[in-house]
Image (tube, rainbow, N blue to C red; front, side, top):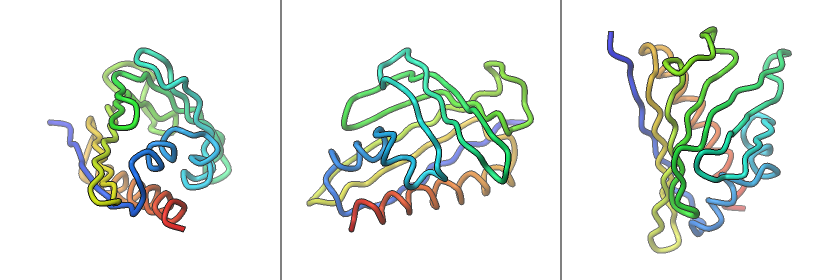
Length: 141
């Protein structure tokens, strides 16, 4: 069976530079991303880790920055320790964030691939909408 992918967008009334900071500053990320601690130096080839606690369980998710255009685009591989899959390349998803600013509004486009089924796709889509809804609230204050 083919794996699924998703694309979701959110418009944020803030300059792209502020949205970028919201996507890459660990202190801001923690405020809207379920309390997650993100660590990376945001350079191509560097590791990225996501750690925290979800429903009483600690997690350590990880990946590698594959491509980055500061202020505009980031692509990273991603494996979730809570996915129930082995930590091997075929179980990693590719996640990207792209920014496009127009008249003071920045459109954030997220893509994610290697999703195993429709239920997982819906779950991921809902989570991303919640996460970026939180970012939008912070930046539009």
